Image 1 (spheres, rainbow, N blue to C red):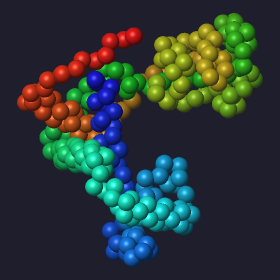
Image 2 (image 1 turned 180 degrees about the vertical axis):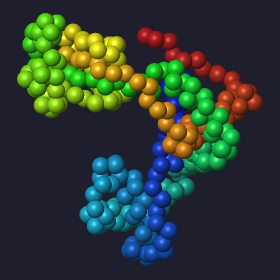
Image 3 (image 1 turned 135 degrees about the horizontal axis):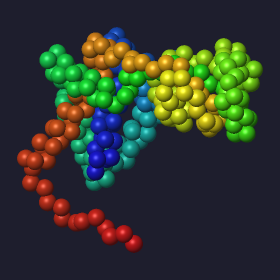
Image 4 (image 1 turned 30 degrees about the vertical axis):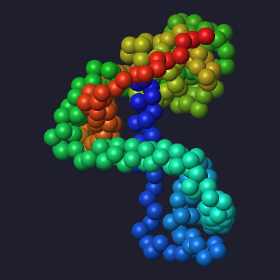
Length: 274
């Protein structure tokens, strides 16, 4: 149930994110047996394409999408001529589409409400506490040596245990791009690195060196130089994100209220597993 509700919220957010057509005159761009095709209809067809196609130049998309709208007009006219507009199947599907549109319009009203600065600041204060408690605000300055097998990484650990300098050994043996800089990765947060590397690095104290660590890039030996608390992002930086989070929570709250006030009867339970 929770996953389905999350999917519904994601759908509503996606609807809100659709680009708005330019506010210019909705010119007629074609006529099909006297029926007008407008610029907005072609733009809507383009906006309905997968994201990778929307990146193509407008002049590339315009003609095929205009022809798609023209074809739709022709098919719709033929369907009406055959009397399908008055059929039971048409009425049933239009009722379903109408429900979907009403659902989206209603939830958009909930999601687009403007939250007060007081509400946003309260949300920010709660977020900042969680942020600090989660350790997300911590950064480390580390070096690493990247090699392509575990045996080579283990041999490097032995040399380091014998007192060789980490930066010198990184410049000599690392196959990673930071090798010439002594393996220096600078400051980073846990989420900046692949999980295998980040988990191992953040488990080390300042000055400590890891054993061999495998990641999708190969095998690492890691040294943490320093640790520090990163600055917490400010209110202004987080306000847009918090607005979205409050809008999402408003959807859940509204649905909970509607369910509480409703009389719901489950007539048929879920089918038993075979």
